[in-house]
Amino acid sequence: MQPNILLVRYGEIFLKGQNRPYFISALVNKVKQAVKPIGAHVFYSDSRIYVRADDLDDCARRVCNVFGVHSVSLAIELDKKDIDVIGEAAVSLLEGKKGTFKINSRRSDKTFPMNSIEISTEVGGRVLEKRPDLVVDIHKPEHVVEVEVRDMVYVHSGRIMGMGGMPIGTSGKAMLLLSGGIDSPVAGFMMAKRGLMLEAIHFASPPYTSEQAKEKVVKLLSILSKYCGNLRMHVVPFTKIQMEIYEKCPEDELTVIMRRFMMRIAQRIAEKTECGALITGESMGQVASQTMLSLNCTNSAVDMLVLRPLIGFDKTDIIDVAEKIDSYETSILPFEDCCTVFTPKHPVTKPKLSHIEKSEQRLDVDALIEDAISGIEIIDVDSEGRI
Ligand code: ATP
Ligand code: MG
Image (cartoon, rainbow, N blue to C red; front, side):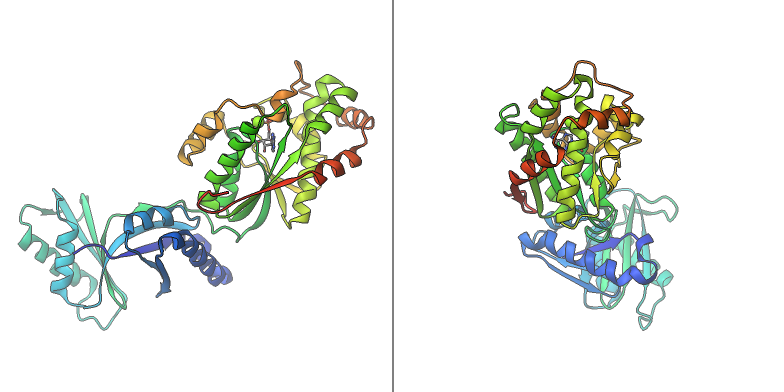
């Protein structure tokens, strides 16, 4: 007997109270989207999500990337509630295994004539008949076979851990400021995991930033789409703004003023696209533009909520996540970002908002923003990372 169905478990913390049906239907929809390309069938029954597919391993990989999924198990589904057949299923799941085992049973179908302890004992006995080399250990078994007697019987062994988190969209939608660096894709991933649907914005400064630099950001976007589904990115032409700042403002304030422009434009696009927050990859003290005073100046340019999930992360912690989500290799490709092209030699680390605002008076901020927004290019990727 081979596993023929996938059992999907979801995090229980989010299932309390009135939000339960909303959360579950969102999760079912996300699982459906994730397995659509392989033609799998998803259904919800008896408080559990199930998936039937030809290739259950591929199916499990896809479902484990869905936020809100706690874990999955490849199970043998039996429509016959017969203890001998259940025993055979347990034996086949232990094929090739050595050492100790235990049977764990649960019975929600109370019409089944044995209780859970009796089921475990009977199934364990049948396993030992066929596999006298195995030893029962109920305290620290190497293998656990689980038997669930519900409307059908499910027999499975082992769990593949999912991403956890909450289904995308259940927390609303936010605009991710996506650069080509290591941090912002990780920031986007973390907020998507908390249930936010993402839209992205990228600032490019051609000809100082190359076509390859843009392609790298598109690649990062498609990596994120593996977890987030379809994603849209607004690519904003930023050269003119940077040149104006460069010409008219003090050199050491360049980065902070530039970051304020990014935030303002991001907020404008966020409002147009019904995003309730901005997301950045900023981390306290990482660079001059991320000291507390610099962050305060950046923050003051907008009145929208700004989420900075990496604020308390060390770079090494961020890299760990980047490796886990597979963005690291792309992020370290050596293409320039607009921030690296116009970097002052000695950026202010303790900017004063009043000074920055004064410097900005030399610029026609609104006109520059309008002009940049009118040149936006939109790039869409689907959940398979295709443009
Ligand atoms: P990252 O690794 O994400 O590039 P960083 O450490 O290089 O971050 P900064 O360059 O100061 O830091 O940028 C801080 C944040 O500002 C980024 O995490 C990102 O959210 C946003 N950002 C920076 N450059 C761009 C850009 N070209 N387009 C969109 N957002 C940007
Ligand atoms: Mg950067």
